[in-house]
Length: 219
Image (tube, rainbow, N blue to C red):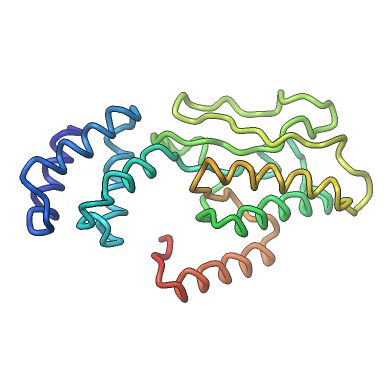
């Protein structure tokens, strides 16, 4: 089915765009096999590239497809999914810090539903979470995840701060880890609101920025 998908994409979009017959089929098929991605992932990547008008960019399409196939989406777990019974002020501040760092690094941000882990999502992806930050200092709270989901931990620089204020050094250490990860991973999707009104206004600002730059807006 993967090969049929690539062949159909070539016939539909590319023969008038400068490709030789079979050239795209070989290029994309080889990359898909190399990265071990599924038909669903390949279909999404080809759909994105087609929508963005990039499939006709013959000289660069190999590197563009390789980048997107090699960078699965990242989903940031919500505080509740990281073991917090409730979202306190401190937890909210830390999550805001993670989200803001991701935003500043240019990661794509798409809110998805809280029942994501049970939704049957079958593409390769990473689950980003804050490790070793619950009261017991263990990661027993993490849910059992399907084989296509891989855990990607941010390491808390110390015990969870007390009170309602997160010190700058603590927040900066977590933000730096996000920045470091952004050098390797291109995408992130966010699960659930940090806090309803704050997240919604930040997301609307993000969408407005995308539109002003002429970039595709997540749907």
